[in-house]
Amino acid sequence: MPLGLRRFQLEGDDQCITFSCYRRQAYLATSDAKDIFLDSLELIRRHYLFEVLGYVVMPEHVHLLVSEPPDEEIPRSKALQALKISVSRRLDARPFWQRCITTSMSLPMTSGWRS
Image (cartoon, rainbow, N blue to C red; front, side):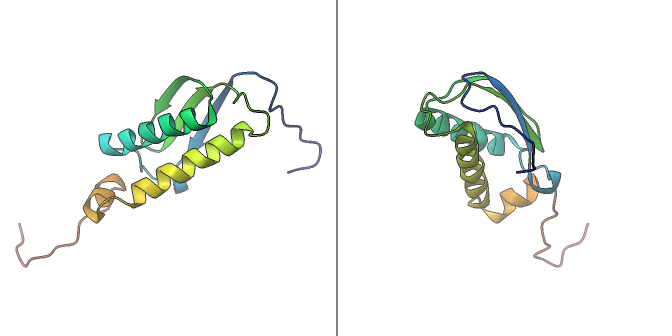
């Protein structure tokens, strides 16, 4: 952490948080990927007992308006870290063809047919 920077966590305030996908790739472009994100958000919200007051899921980034978890031992940063890990693992577990569509890669040609 840079010198002189102060964190204002555990103050009991709501906070607007924005984070981006790795290299601003559109990993959340499909409805399937957004559903995975929202399911993970709900699981993490229940586990860490914080409130989601609002959210916007864009193809390459997310905006969240969240409350502070009531447990002072677990800062909001740990809950967000758990959310990001959960989403990335679940997105990586999808079949290859679903990941290609999400990341705007083209599928490899498997036959000799050309259009």
